[in-house]
Length: 128
Image (cartoon, rainbow, N blue to C red; front, top):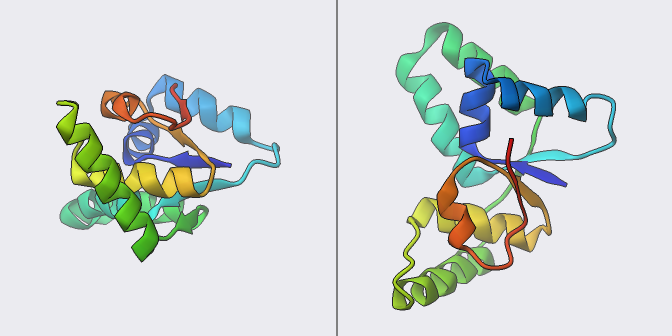
């Protein structure tokens, strides 16, 4: 299962060659494409701010994805992980912690180019 980060969705709409190439690779492959709820919020916020065609394209893209929810246990996992990383001097933002905890709970691979996720142990990442 692939979990798309907001960075991937932004890049895909901007026509980034790596993101487009990855989308073509997934066509016809029985891979479940998902998006963690916090990444969905991060991505759609920009569309709602700008409106118009960007919002339409953003909604079209995300409606094809299964949304991975944020549950209380997962929020606790994110907080625990964040505390550990803070103690190690390797802090990660709260939104990224929530995304990582959701992806980890669902045993998915996060598709992103955001380097902050590399600080999170045990998280399966795929870049483009």
